[in-house]
Amino acid sequence: MKTSCTHHKECLKVIQRILDKEATSAEEAQFLANKDQCLPCQEGYNLEQSLKNAIKTKCSVSCPSDLFTRIEAKLFLVLILISILIPLFC
Image (cartoon, rainbow, N blue to C red):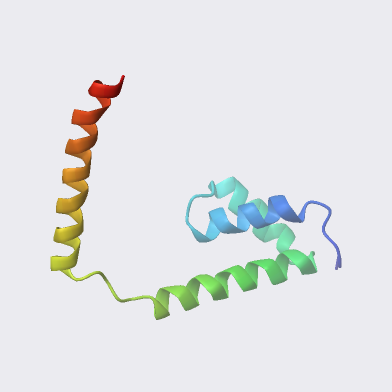
C-alpha cells in the first residue's frame, strides 16, 4: 500500500465530487478501485465522508418560514432599488 499520494489534491477533489454525487461513474469506479492501495486516499475519503455525515446529522435545523419571508421581501426591495439606481448613475 502506498503511504504517499503524488496527486492528493486531485484525489480530494474527486472524493468531494463522489460524496456530492457529482462524479461520473467512471471517475468513481477508478477512484474506488485505486483507493484501497493508497493510504492517504483512504484516509481522505473516510474523513470527508465522516465530515459530511456529521454535518448532515448536526445541521438539520431549517430557517423559520416567517424569517425567510422577511429576508426575501427585503432582498426584493434591494433589487428594486438597484434596478432604479443603476440607470441613474450609468
